[in-house]
Length: 336
Ligand SMILES: Cc1cc2nc3c(=O)[nH]c(=O)nc-3n(C[C@H](O)[C@H](O)[C@H](O)COP(=O)(O)OP(=O)(O)OC[C@H]3O[C@@H](n4cnc5c(N)ncnc54)[C@H](O)[C@@H]3O)c2cc1C
Image (tube, rainbow, N blue to C red):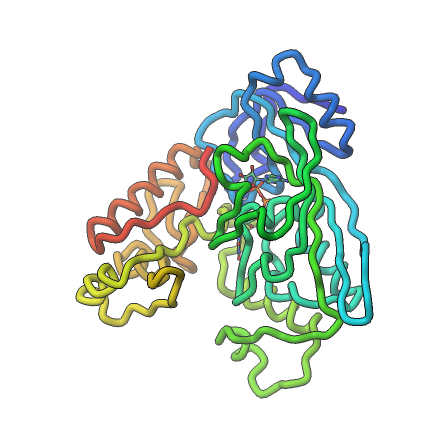
């Protein structure tokens, strides 16, 4: 076990913010977790689990233990003629996991190709894209209680998945490290191509397979999103707001062309990107921080912005949208 002090997290977050962790450990086996629990100040210290840092904004140094999930391994644990359950360790990259499934002719997750995620973080915010969410194929997961050392099993119901939400995103459950996740996948390829971008990509072509769909998704994403290697960002900074019918009626007076999707309890989900764009903020920039000119949900660190500067900028976006449209948009990114 290699515990490092005063460790720069710059290479461990996709905003590439130079925050420091008082202690940093990349866990490669369960014993590392039991060992670190013995450190004398561990119980009372702050702890943060970190995957690929692609959904996190460090606004300050972290005065405690940052535990990076480096657990590896993917295997099929059960199968019959129609389906299989695949188990992946939390430190595997999500894209490696999708490749494994495709190589083994197991289908369902193609639309989630190219999301920068560790497998362990995928259930935390119930990742989703192009009409598919990880919940659609989720089977169960195993978590480690960092306070007690207990190993716990969670089924789909226990995880309380919602839109970019789960049990693990709640502040009181931040002591649970997701060790491994299991997905139930089909042996029959049933493409989900409800999204216009996907239909446009294939046009009249009907005979595509799962690998071609996965490749299509990667290409569509590349054409729509700013390249993360140049434009450091954490994907969608804000969640799409879910509003009441009354709010929608008021909003339609200002934005008659706004589209919406039905959500739970008679509410509707609207596009945060549309609100930001209509507020004239697409491409808006202050110093090294700005709204991407390519995608208005994405906030970019164009150079050496601090986490605090990115955070202040995001609050300004929230305020402008609220003042203009009376709609509160909330961050999807985890703010530390
Ligand atoms: C360019 C880009 C595009 C993106 N596109 C999408 C998209 O299409 N759809 C989508 O849903 N998201 C998208 N995201 C957001 C991001 O990819 C996901 O939220 C992803 O799941 C984060 O994974 P991570 O490993 O980087 O987690 P991190 O950013 O490291 O952590 C995120 C949160 O999960 C917690 N966490 C991490 N690992 C564990 C674990 N093993 N156990 C318990 N808690 C843990 C952390 O403490 C933190 O609270 C995008 C991000 C980027 C940069």
